[in-house]
Image (tube, rainbow, N blue to C red; front, side, top):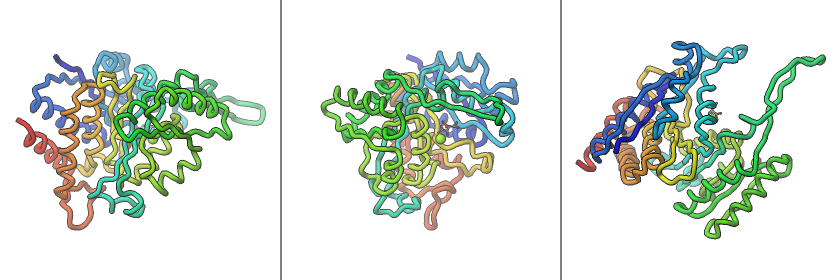
Length: 365
Ligand code: IPM
Ligand code: MG
């Protein structure tokens, strides 16, 4: 059986890290005897330059008919004029909404060999292993009304935090399912004491939690959580939260791992069954300041490819093989610029990709 993967490299370091994750997928397919078909499309600034819009209908249709989407990053100063409504990120929002990618999985792990790369104390981050589940198609990003207008007193704008029972329930279910295969704990984060939408969130989360008698579900306020996350990250297993809070907390959580260049993500359109349509991208952005220099860390992109194998192609063994290849290379002391320290071996983006690929080849074949 052949699997179709749409590849959207995007802008900045997107193309160079996607080259590495693509290479990793091709190698896994060779080693394990799978047939993967790749189809490329333009997205973000690259699509604005070529077609005048952040993504064409053809590219969207190609993604819709794929089994999974491998995504790089979008955006850059060239398309950053605040007065212009056409933005590279619109491609991302359109993909998320149209493909119904409501559950954004962002695992954050502190690796033993990289504890010194975190600005937090080693004893604080050591052993931290959190799976964030960020709601991705609702809340402030998409709620209506969402508009800007002129009033007699001047300009005015509004965004709305809007959640339906169904939107909350389905993402909390994803979190509970993931927790079953982890340590069985889910913390739902909201702002219950100030927002009506958060009161519904907490109520629905509690109801869904009751369906999972094996899961320990608790609640935390967003402000408390933002402090607890860096004060004692090891207390968390799975964390489920809204679109806006999830965006903020996952960047904050990157300091636990030590570099944004390490963190992958999966955006799923259903429960994590292994056969769910999903989009896979590093959580870092397009980093235009370092684009084209060969210094970007491809590990976030490669670990995203491992998540693609796991959640969209049902290839758990293959996903584990790729993840353990990454671990072996880190254990041997190879480091890209963002995680380099004295006494370790400095690599370029491509060298890091090649090292990981060679571990996958050594593993089986
Ligand atoms: C993310 C990013 C995006 C978001 C931006 C690029 C619009 O920060 O995926 O976390 O806010 O969702
Ligand atoms: Mg973000």
